[in-house]
Amino acid sequence: MATKKSSSSKSSSSSSSSKKSNFWGLNKISFWTIVAVTVLYAVSLILSAINANSLNTAIKALQGIATAIMIVIVAILAWRYVRSKQVVWKVLYVICLLIVIAGIIVPLCLI
View 1 (cartoon, helix red, strand yellow):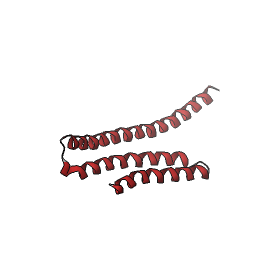
View 2: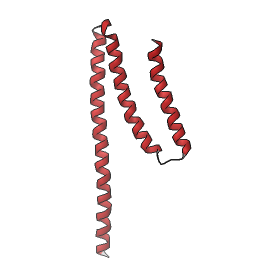
View 3: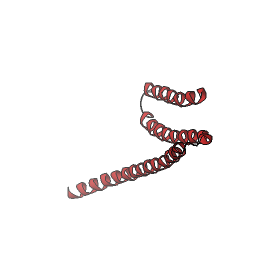
View 4: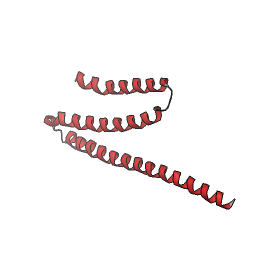
């Protein structure tokens, strides 16, 4: 009976350790994404603060790139959640993603 208990604890610890490695990988990716996006927003903030009107396009481009990076990562994580769900969840995911993309592109086209 003691051997069964130790073997089951080994299998549960090995499965939890594999989950931890994926979890830490996701945490690491999230952290470095925030760092990269922070750098992009900081550069655009500095350019905006010095009132570099000639660099207005560059400021908007940097902010757009930072926003796109965050949306891509969130969309990937959301798809991992929705992938195993019913079709209605997948349709909701696609509709939300299209609205977010339209919400980014349409204001850029109106300027």
